[in-house]
Image (tube, rainbow, N blue to C red; front, side, top):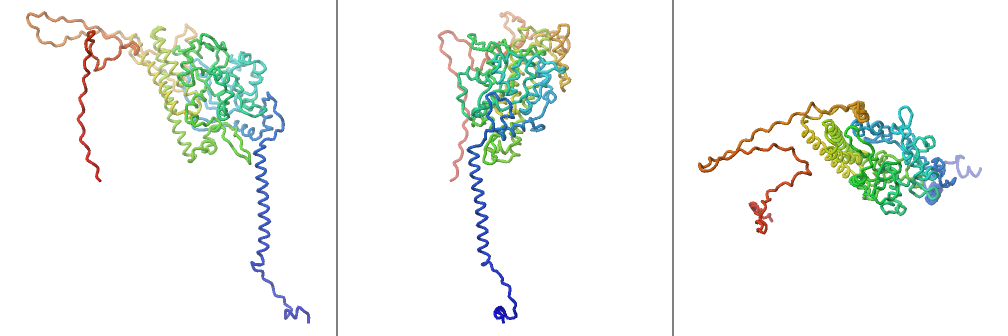
Length: 586
């Protein structure tokens, strides 16, 4: 008998069943292997991220001092370059903005009248992403006529459109670049706004590459090189997104008329400050400078050029130290690398990374609140435009009625100031959101100024016998508005042509004064002479505000003799005291 038969009768070996106690060592062993592997991978990942954070960029190819090609920079900084390329995205929209060719003149024909006789009445479109900077300026009607010929603009118009500009300024000199012709550089400039505009190629630090900003700070006695990094995150934008004009005679002058007339030298008018009132004061001191003469009202006008940075400075975000880049170029994290998203766009298109960093409520709530502010601002802006458009036509009616230049001067002086305030807000991107309170304040002043012009024009017309309402032309769409503007332009250029008539009929003769009735009086005594009927003078037209005597008050007393004691001021009767309130219950 074999040993197995002895041990297991019948030769059948029973199956062994393993319990959890038998499996436990293997489970512990396998789990230890998995945990060790995962822990090792985690440690390696942490070490890689730490290395990436310390060495975020691998300089594949050194960038030359005047390298303007964005793609070359992108070899070293691929994350920034890839996000920058997204500025070529088409079709992004918000309620009042986005990256598409919104035609402002089609949407708002009032601006055809407000800019009549100027390039903005012919072509005025919303700016798109930075990738379209060169393309759009070459195709706009303000630089190129429909037949392909240029409009005679200076090379200064290229200043903010390409990183090739600093290179050309270095080659030609600053004044030499400004004095050139726009058409001479049209075939040379092709690279859109990019890296060299804002960064030092050696250190990648933010830097100022446009002289106008540096010169404006210097005239204020400020050194822009001492600005902090957070300030620079807005100042690099302020190289272009500001009010500017093309002046002459650069350099200090003893007569206070630095850059006091038209020219080709790019100037930021910040010598008096950054507000609308400061700009009014600045241009008011330089009467020889104006952008164009309005063909309807004959007013010398000032055109505001997107004063985004100036308006931003008055808002809550600037007060809290928030920069332009914080909202329009928010930080992103990829792996262990934190970098700036160079897809410059409206924060409403990336609320989580921009607004949501500080405002901890839903994206829809944020968007609804912004749109509510912008919608109110938009309606108020249209009110200002309506008042200004009517003011231009009112002044034109005064011209048709034969008003003299001396009579028209105060109207025109007030009109350019009112429209400049409207344009200070309208030309600013963001539909008022950068500083809602300041924008509403300035628009209110623009409306007030325009309505004052209309009141003065009405009085002037009345003095000349025109008391019927002015016949305002139909400008309900762009085509009609442009036809009216063109008719006035043609009439101002040729004395043989007459502008559209705005007066409703011939002047009305002044009504003869009715004989005044003597006031009833008691019969005079027999010994007293009879009272005579003194003629009542005709009513004079109302005087201007500046010519009116100060209004008399109830407390104003007749003049007293010299040395006489001053009369005691009568006290107003005291009001009846209110009954005392009952004591509160314990």
